[in-house]
Length: 208
Image (cartoon, rainbow, N blue to C red):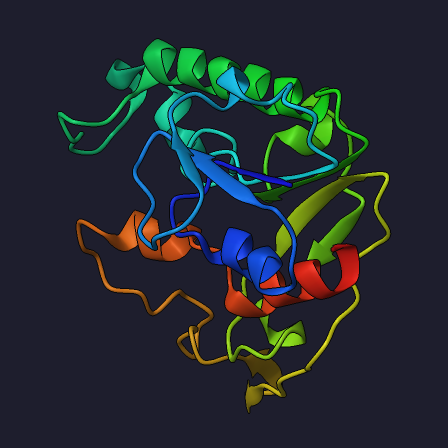
């Protein structure tokens, strides 16, 4: 099986632990020793895999930071010089959409594509399932979409109860107002994008 757009090795290693042949692929090197192709996933996607689990980058697919797609002259805030805005960001989104759809149309019988809530629900199709970390043993909330082909829906394994603030549920990664607790840092994107171990284990147990 192929784990596309994964450098952590977390999903790959969950399948390897179950006795499957699995390889991860990303433009970045793997963070954990194991079978990994560093490069373009489309170099190897036609190698006869039975299953692919893909995590395409969500930077330009998510519904957050929609203001950044406006032209810079129409944005009333200080802009970071290392970010994309306006037409450049719109072009990047179109490239991200094409990449996602190309993964989805791969000639592999069983496919799962994981991504944040965003534009693919309208530009591709609605997801088959939403999953949460707290359904798989993590004290955290991050509603995430799964698009499935040839696979059953992933079944929850270990529900973690929330705390309640003014009658509303909150998990460990959330403040009382539901904001994410992860502090700003140069590695925040990596922490936020890494697959939860409970999800990886459930995928290997149920789809392996």
